[in-house]
Amino acid sequence: MYVAVKGGERAIENAHGWLAEARRGDATVPDLAVDQIREQLALAVDRVMAEGSLYDPDLAALALKQARGDVVEAVFLIRAFRTTLPRFGASAPLDTGAAQIIRRISATYKDAPGGQVLGPTFDYTHRLLDFGLAESATPAPAPEAPSSLGAVPHILSHLGEEGLIQPEREGGAEVPDLTRAPLEFPASRPLRLQALARGDEGFLLSLAYSTQRGYGRNHAFIGELRIGHVRVSAYLPELGFEIDFAEILLTECETVNQFQGSKSEPAQFTRGYGLVFGQSERKAISMALVDRALRTRELGEDTGSAPAQDEEFVLSHCDNIQSSGFLEHIKLPHYVDFQAELELIRKLRRRAMPEAAQ
Amino acid sequence: MTSASLTRRDWMGLLARAPLARLDTHWPDEPPAFMWLRAPEIGTMMVQGRAGAVGAAFNLGEVTVTRAALRLSCGTVGHAMVQGRGLRKAERAALLDALLQTSAGPELQARVLGPLQAAERAAQEARARRAAATKVDFFTLARGEG
Image 1 (cartoon, each protein chain N blue to C red):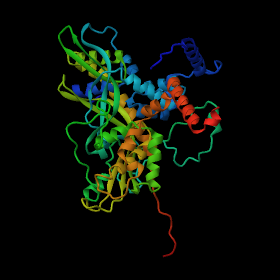
Image 2: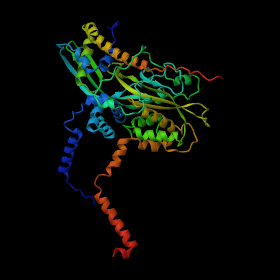
Image 3: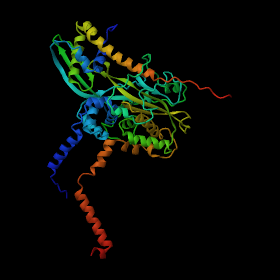
């Protein structure tokens, strides 16, 4: 029997009232503007866009404000908002080789054409708290140097010319979309990449780390990590031509992985790939390592079955909105279920220990 | 500002990527009358990437866009698909797209598109100069006697 209970409306309303007040914090401290979040907490904004799977910095900043800085809650708000919007179409596949680079490094070639460009990185900082930031201050303008505006080629294209790295295969005409059709296994690589691109950064980081520690080892080099602005183009049927309707910031990671060869493939380097909205290299590197781990079956590797190589395990658990939705539903009333469990335990104890029951 | 005039494909992209504030700066005091063919509507476009940058296409995530279409009294049709959620931005881009196709085109190219293109270029160059300043110059330290 299902028993419906009502009540708690006023408690809920008052709780939300308190939430609004708590969100604002001490009213003597100035209110935080959305554009301040967008400009000064940009990496949190980027993470919300990546995992929310919607590129819109103003919306992501608003979501962070509403969620009191809880990133997963902000991602939830973005995902929910997205469902209210019509989708007009799809872009042409991005040409990340034409990106305007703000950062681009390689751990495999010191003298890669185009050079090693550090960009606005935390690397080589001493990770000492800067108490100067507690005071409001405007930093000196960033140093500049003469530059030509040319695109820099992908580093792995050089290995490709020698045939030392597995070439990428063309995909089918249909691009699978997990927001339109339920995930089915085995999943194609395009579907896996979509799931990873919107997957939880922490989960993917842990899985990627597990491959480095030996659970499905596939030693990875960072062939190239690039962060840059990329134009997005689409063919508009009503016009009969393509326009570059947007420019977005992306982080891309290409790994080069050892591969001894298998029954079906010669010894050669193989690839892992990560591509993420915004500036998010931890996520992009994690994605590339997990992408490579999930390719173990297609490469015919005999490395056992580590968690990062198990696509059903990885893809079913990488979405933080799905995970937290199921996790948090156990907060909701389970009074009747629990009553039944309680009755059962009492009955079993009476049967096992009749004297104690008396 | 611009040496050669832009094609429609180029100006539609330029208007789509420009910040609203910059379109507002170049807005005529008395915009011409028009009729909506498609009132501004906010939606998304799915952005596709490629596995390994060159392989199979996959769905990376969506980007917000606003689109609109309108017709001037002379019959010229203007379209817009602009980045972000911006009803007014889409209206301005669609109206400019229509006007740029009329006899007012050459004057608008110089007055509106020129500054927009210069601003976009300046932002790119500023980023490129900052990036160039962080380019690593490797040098080899003196090695021990071999």
